[in-house]
Length: 318
Length: 220
Image 1 (tube, each protein chain N blue to C red):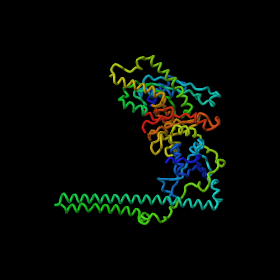
Image 2 (tube, chains in turn yellow, blue):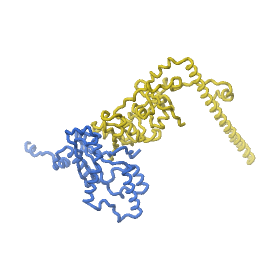
Image 3 (cartoon, chains in turn cyan, yellow):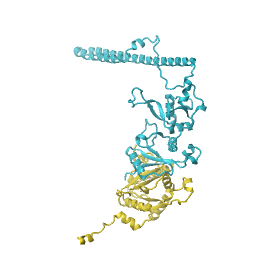
Image 4 (cartoon, rainbow over the protein chains, first blue to last red):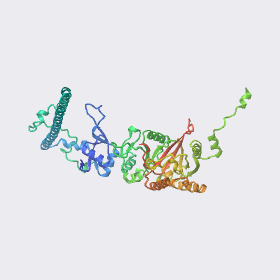
């Protein structure tokens, strides 16, 4: 469960996007570093099915930068890293394919095991039900001899129900009698599509890592809020720059709509009303803030993060 | 016909315009301040309203752009007064009050600070920070003034309070004092009052609570 990936985690840089393809890395970053990103993977044949998206996970440049600055991740040019694919040795290729096949076998074995277990459970349940029904019927017969005919009628629906349950189960695994009962013969390996290409390819050496991502001027505020334990996500849906959640977004409603300003950037008073009103309308605060120093006044972005000041606004209700 | 025209007179100015011209404010900031003060006093029934000014920085100062902790070049007016009801209660404070059966009416009134602003006025994070940096100083000033004016006002009326409630209240004030340091019940806050003075300005003043730092919203 607590998987620890090898650090730094390579973030794939593909045509201007920062992507993660390893589910282990995604869960690790979310759990340990409060980085959620946005899942953008959909089915190529059915792109309109976008309620539940999957891998890859797209990171905001701010998120990628934060991870790189922390030393948790590095940026890898995906296209360059895959140049080695053409020169893959025949030996390596075959080993990789064998590896995939054994993984597939492992998966199908797990699946058939699960099926077998389900089957046994339902069979056991059935048996219990039958036994219970029999016991009930015999008990009823013993106590009330006069009313045997209605008892007969009431006891028949039970096996009927059980038969229906059995039918549904059988339908769910029509092939189970052949695969489930005889697990000794070799099964067809489940086809595996690996999400990452790091087993055949070696992890890219540090010299090939790209430099830290360029970030918008709102980065200091982003890093400041992240350091205070907030989970941040893109705010377009709510009309702001970031959404700040006090914990994992799956468990908490967000607290703030965040907009960053430069220290001497002019703020339209009307924007404060707009943000405050919008925030209060969705039971959130409107948070503005920014770093006191400009990037040309300090050595690195990290120095600016310490100078961030933030202010939260709420409608006063008067 | 001519006679009737001569008898028509200009409508008299509104109360607020009279109020502003009467006082003869030179700076537009102060005129805004006067309008907000008028609104607080007559629409929201605030009492003992006091005004002050956070001085600006000299225009030709070269240090302004270098030092982020300097106030902006414009002076910022600041108002303070006692609202008839509490304007803001932090959610955790509210929970504490509920758990201990303390009602808002039991508590002594609190002075609230207001920054009057108007649409189109230059406003930056520097302005905001300047207000919060100077706030403790102004708070102390008005508290001294309040004690001077009415020394008994700061003490809760102890006569008609049963001892149990008095104990609860004392506990509450202790906790409040502590939370000022831990920021458990929110940090410093002011009201941002916004007046629309442009075309179509209808005298509405919008009030927003501004907290220093990240303070969780009241309803979430």
